Length: 73
Image 1 (tube, rainbow, N blue to C red):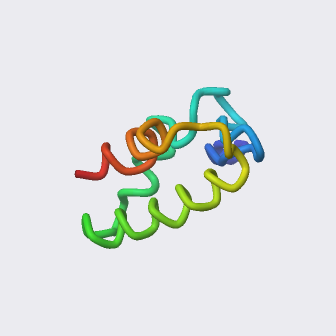
Image 2 (cartoon, rainbow, N blue to C red; image 1 turned 60 degrees about the horizontal axis):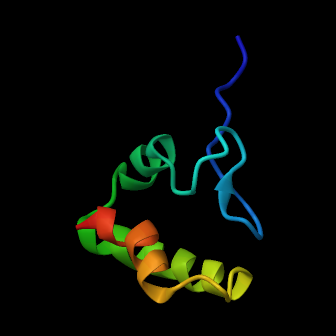
């Protein structure tokens, strides 16, 4: 049986490589949350936010915050 595909971001769009939704998509969020405290998750997602901001300089800061951090609260 084949391994399930990982829901990872495609750069520079930061859309999921598997489902084409904005990353982190729901499946990715479940994996990202697994075994991490809220603080660890927020720090990790802040790192992703900074990388995404470099790839998408036109994106509004509030949009990036909502996409990468709001769901971690």
